[in-house]
Length: 113
Image (cartoon, rainbow, N blue to C red; front, side):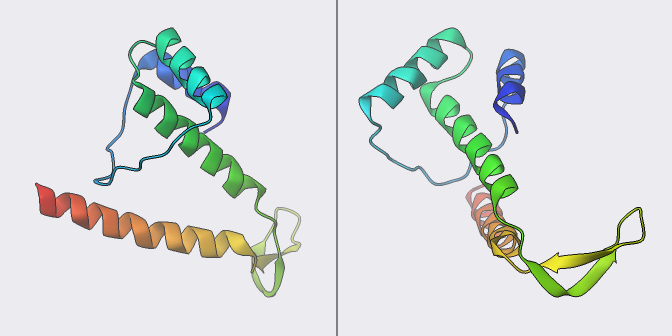
């Protein structure tokens, strides 16, 4: 989710399921001040929700910017009939690990109900 989309989402004040773990971090003062400023600007959001949403947006952008590394195998064709080669860079590994941990966290959530 892009930051522009995130701001629109905050305006709607929707929220998604949260993971069962808490992450404690000490923010630099300048970052903490920005989070507090956003929480005041969007009173329907807590500091924690602001940070979680910003982190999610940063991770989305990180995924978009992981370098593509062309593999040898062809996975399909584009609209011009040109071959599309498998990505053997960090992207597929990151997606695989994300899926792994999503399954583990969802299982933990199911055990707490």
